[in-house]
Image (cartoon, rainbow, N blue to C red; front, side, top):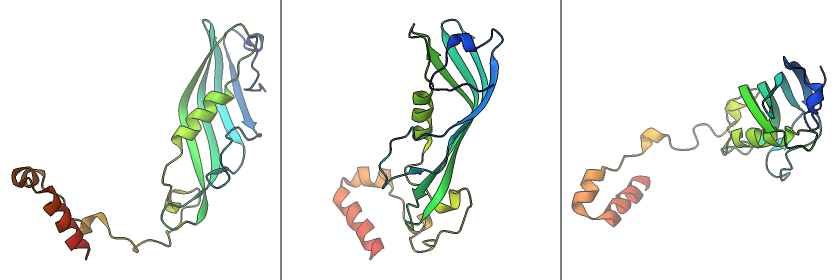
Length: 164
């Protein structure tokens, strides 16, 4: 059944609920173009039902974004897929329910702060691979030793010496 998630009227939902599949083609994210950009529609598939005085959507939501790799600065497509996702909206007497704001928030929260191109829809070897020290190149700070000596600045100087 085709139901617009921006304007769900409770009379559209039968007592047993309804399976819905669709896309939101308009830009609901309002992101700065320098940041992540939508790279297609938001897709959803699931079950919509009425529970007490609210609407409940259970299913999957996904969206593709054009993002910049945090290491090499190349642009690539990253997919957010929320499987087994649930959205709940109260019936407030307004007549219709809008689930798009909840979808927007959940997808934006799932966007990585530092995406890497090997995590994209078409994974690739990052051109910056090997250009940065690996975590094994760093010496962990012994907290007991630092606490005993009380010389925090000396510990920081040792870190600088490792880099040089």
